[in-house]
Image 1 (cartoon, rainbow, N blue to C red):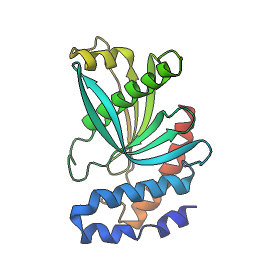
Image 2 (cartoon, rainbow, N blue to C red):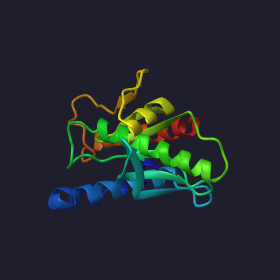
Image 3 (cartoon, helix red, strand yellow):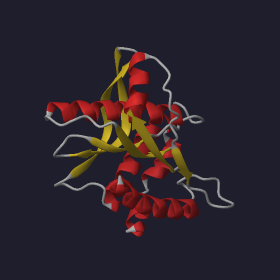
Image 4 (spheres, rainbow, N blue to C red):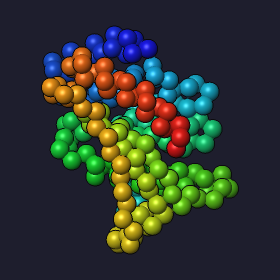
Length: 196
């Protein structure tokens, strides 16, 4: 399975050739990885690219675009997020990841209410960030309300983060040693996603 993913990286050569389209190539590469590893299941879920979600901040409706997400077909709820910040915000992707997690929390609860289900008080979203960094972002009702009303939550939110690092390697998917390790972590990440 890893060999197939590595073979599908021809788009990486195009990344350096066409810098303006870099983010689109990276999104497609990430979608391919998630699909080959088995996140995309035609009966239950789909890997979606550039999925828009509403986000209510201080009473004002906004929209958040998620680069890659996993959508459950039966509920239309989103479960994992992959965000690529190589062009827009390469040094601090966490703010955007957390904003997207809150938008997903809001949207999933709206869907639950439309289906006659109680909204969730808390949802932990497994996420993958720039340079193969995995996150677990717990979004609580308290944090969500703080964003909606423009206040500070009383409780601290602790985001768990795990970066894929290989000694002596720069840390980019173009390097075959790093790519092999990163793909191993993607496979392990699939098991983690199932637990949430």
